[in-house]
Image (cartoon, rainbow, N blue to C red; front, side):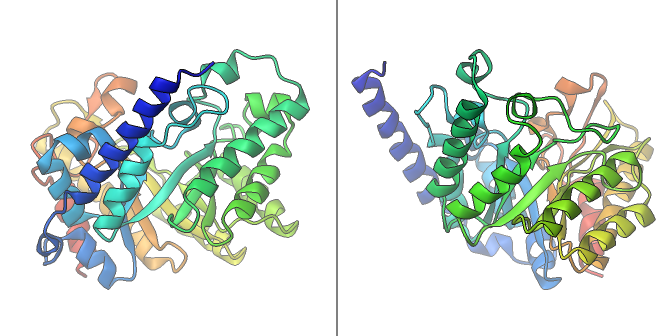
Length: 351
């Protein structure tokens, strides 16, 4: 049972946060010049993107300034995932997500929705419930229709299905696969298209950027969807890599080309390059080289029109929490000072 007072307070919070972020306008002059990734990417016909957090956008002026001056595309890191959005069945809290969209719109930035269907970060009411197949279909349909419909006409793209393929090429075990069957993927894309006929629809995954069993399985999945007329516009290649492991550039290029041959876009969607914590100058140089190589591949591919990082400053990276002993994976340090990787991206965009 909902408490009317809490619902009223929730709506007030949505309004206040959205207004605050929409009226915090960073001067557009900061987004111009030879040291702006955003400006140079635009000259190349590309968007340069990053994952963002609404709390940092609201509280940290340096975060906002760097974001607006350097990036033209934003992806909410967590705010649009099922769990944060829907704490109770039938109830949606769009406060954080709305704030990000409002800020982006106020600064001429596009928004990539992330993500509609995932095995992770689901609400407790969903994971702890006992559901029939028909009930799960209804829940997923309602979720996609509600969220995509809420932002209809305002977003550039949606990561519709996220990380549905295992490293061995099989479909990942999830509440959706167990409860609905593999057709949940097709249903999700069809429902997303019904809710917004114009937004780009992507399948998004990691470790499938280059060559290998998983890359081939993702290709087979999206090729089958295309062949059957399922509305899909592209594949997101996440690109979470490290200085001791990253895919060969020729393999990434070949993968992008075969996706292009299907009529699909191929975007870099979540790139970071982790290094050992307290990295040496050599490690930061290697990191810069990896960033530069992947940007070069994207710039050479006509269907790679967006190149996004999973955050831009090391103090807001997910890496240290999930990879102990590793970190410093982004292109600005924790004081928002540009690292060699930032300058490497500038060099390639300015070529």
